[in-house]
Image 1 (tube, rainbow, N blue to C red):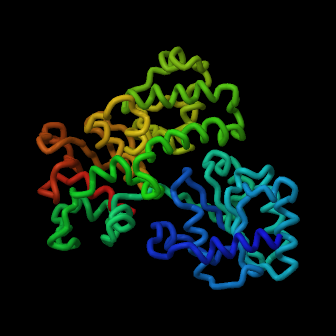
Image 2: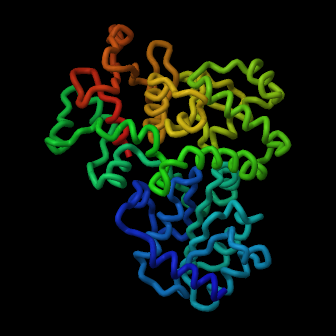
Image 3: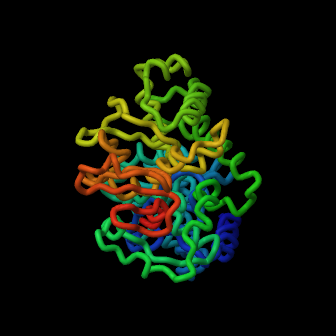
Length: 397
């Protein structure tokens, strides 16, 4: 236990407070049980340590425990936190909970037994945590941390701090968005770098090996994280990796379930479930028709990779600009809004706003007779009439 507390002290005191993710200011930190889930590499551990650092409490009162530490191979989570509590502990930050068997049951027991104990838990395996939410839903506030938005990337990498924009502000008929930015701000100067490298905060560690690390993360998610998923046969991990690879070469595309099953040797009756698993792991994004309820049994209308960085990491050839645009738009907007496939345009948002995505020369032909419709272009700096620059949708969080 003493060694765990020493590690906690070292990590907590050493975390930087220079940059905080968007979610930091949205979490109701006073709640007694908080869960933070999200894809691997998005910064959940740093976020939790930053909060713990700001509490400025001794490590025998507030401590960080990583459940992938070798200590927990011979000690239970329950006995560790109980011992910590009995010696004066009040706040436990539990990281990587998905790597510990029966974590949800033991956290539930701790919560029910000790009314003055606060628990914050994080986990990289979205699928596993999502499966456990039913057990904790009456007790915990669950949050999800996405990767960096373009706005966050500019602050994190270039110390350019700008306010979050709402969708309503972006589509306003008389936008005053130019006034929200400094006169010398060049919104496109760093956009291409973000699309290729800027979604996961660890890109600063080693840019040269960044895409290789992303490929390793995909493999870890499929081969290890999914092992705990009910309904997933781990013997099919190789087939699942092949499915991700096939999707990466074709996105966005309308899936032919029979053809996908033939290419990957995954039974067609299991295909929609497996696509759902990949979506929950934030490796792919499934786009469904507008107006229909979504279930794991329903075939998606289109399949995208989750974010543009994965496109560059997994595609055999350089992804097309059209694909990059659509993946970026879907990724940034779908965090807070319902995005569906549209018969008339590329996307329909919240069932009423139509968006057609393209380059500088994209015409308005497809939105000519549509109300609440906009052309989104990736080569312009600021809105003109009902034409909106693509980068602006990276300021939604």
